[in-house]
Amino acid sequence: MHHGPCADLTRSGPGEIPAKKVKHVVIILKENHTFDNYFGTFPGANGARLPRSPNPPARDHPHTHAAWLARQTTAAREQFIEQDIPVYFSYARQFCLCDNYYTDVAGPSTPNHLMLLCADSPIIDNPSRGAPQTIKINASLPKSLEQSRLTWRSYGGYAIDYLHGVNPKWKLPSDQFRVDATAGQLPEVSWVYAPLEFDEHPPYSNPQGVRMGNVTEGMQWSVDQINAIVRGGLWPDVAVFLTWDDWGGWYDHVEPPTVEVWHGNGAHPGYVGSQFRYGPRVGCIVLGPYARNGYISKVLHSHVSLLKFCEVNFGLATLNPRDARADDMSDCFDFGKSPAPPPPAVP
Image (cartoon, rainbow, N blue to C red; front, side, top):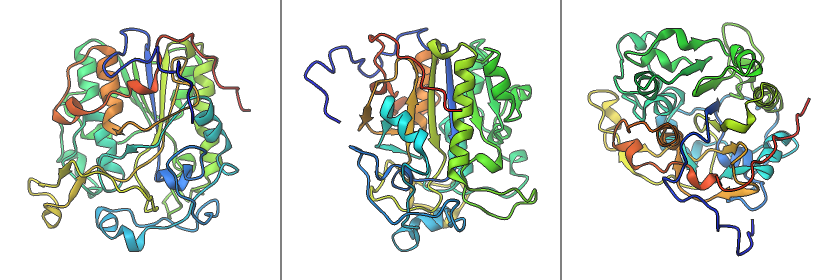
C-alpha cells in the first residue's frame, strides 16, 4: 500500500513504545493456517494465489517437523479467500497486517504455544500425553509479570502447564474471556485460545465429536472476543494481536529464514542440525487505537515479537537471547496519532 511522503513523520522506531499507553495486551491464538492459505489474495501483501480450499477443509494435513521437512512435496496448496474470512480482511484493511511474520518452530502447536509464553521450547514436535509433568520451563512471561506485580491470564490454553512457578489459578476456560472483557476486567496480558469448534484447526476426529474447521465460524468467534473488549470500554487502552500458532500443513511461498538449528538436548535426536527457527509464515493482524491504519508490515516478526512487545510496554527484562534479539512490533503502531475508533461491531 502506498503511503504519502508525510506518512512516517510520527512513526515510532523500534523500542519507542511509550510506557502506559497500552494497559492491556490481548494475544488471540488461532490454529493452523499459513499466510498464503489465508491472506495470499490480500491486496498489496506478499501473497501467492492458490486453488481455493473447501470450507471446512476436507482433512487435517500433516504438520509435524518431519512433514515440514518434506513440505515441497507434501504441503497442501490451497487457500481461503475474502469471502470465507471477510472480517479478517476488513480488520487488515482498517488496521495492520504483517506479511513477514513467522512461527517460531518449524513444527506443530505445542512448541509454538510455548514460544508465545516463554521464548523457549524444549520440543520441536508435540509431546506425548503426560509430558507437562516432565517438562518444566523456569523463565516465562507470566512469571515475569507476577514478579512485577502485574497480572496475566490464559483463557483456554494448555501450554501454561509446562511453566514452572506460575499461579495455576490464572488458567481459565476459554469462555471466561468474553465475560471478563465485557465487564472491563482484563489483566495486563491475556492469552486467548478458542474452543475446538472455533479454533480454525482443520477437522480431525476428536473424543468430543465436535465439528471442526469452518474458518468463517472460527473468524466469528474471534470477532466476538474483540467486540467484547469494545463493549467493556477497554478499546482506548488495548493492543490486540491476532495470529495463528502453526502452519497446519499448508503451503506458503516464502521460505522462512534459518536463525537457529535444533540441538535437541536429547529430545528428537533425529532432527539435530535441522531448522528449528523460524517456522512457516503465518498472518498476524494488529488492532488497537494506536495500530497503524491500512498498513502492511514488511518487518521481520515472529511469535516471540509479541512477548517482546509486552516486555517493552511493561518494562520487563528479556528472558533469553531469542526475545532479546526479537523485534518488538513497534512498526505496527503510531503512538503519536489520534486514537482510532474500534472496528464496526459485526453482529
